[in-house]
Image (cartoon, rainbow, N blue to C red; front, side):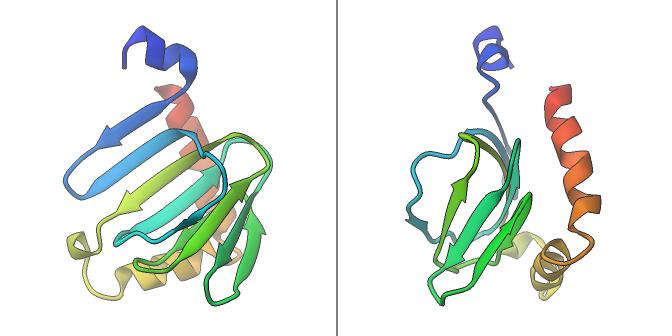
Length: 119
């Protein structure tokens, strides 16, 4: 990362199967990605609303591929991990999203923030 990126706190790491993004979330708007999205708040929490009416609030929210959703943050920035579905075995993303949405979510959230800060 160059000095400008380090000062801004923005970061994007890209591989053919994964993306890690740290930066501005932007204004809340509906999104629909062909990949699975995992959002982690830097501060405060995140609001996730899906097109089918599901609403969740937490430090981490996860969405399966091809689900229309809106994410809003208590803070301007967000950490986002994008996983292409063809890069994992069938059913793995559904299991992961279920685990990330349950009581185990804190065990996943806690290592992600320090990993970002390390950069």
